[in-house]
Image (cartoon, rainbow, N blue to C red; front, top):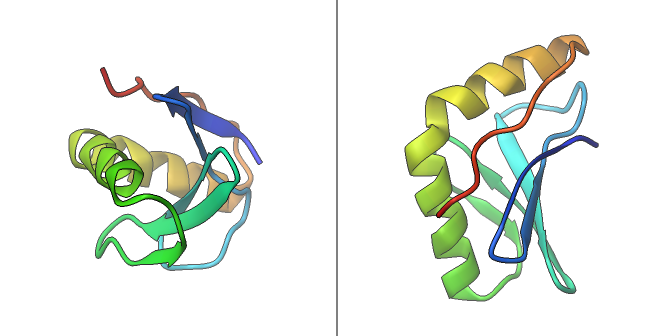
Length: 85
């Protein structure tokens, strides 16, 4: 599972050939969640402030994330996305 970004102790990953809808996985300490890119449905638990930071990052990079999602679905090489500052 490639790491696509890391910020504020949050590690954002994208699985190769993952199921729809487009989503990312993130880890923060002992918390692990996934969040859908388009409708922001969260699967898992994490502090609200962490989920808010991830949503802020998605807001800024949505088109890049969706592009990486399409590449990962095909099994292609993907890169990293700028962290939230």
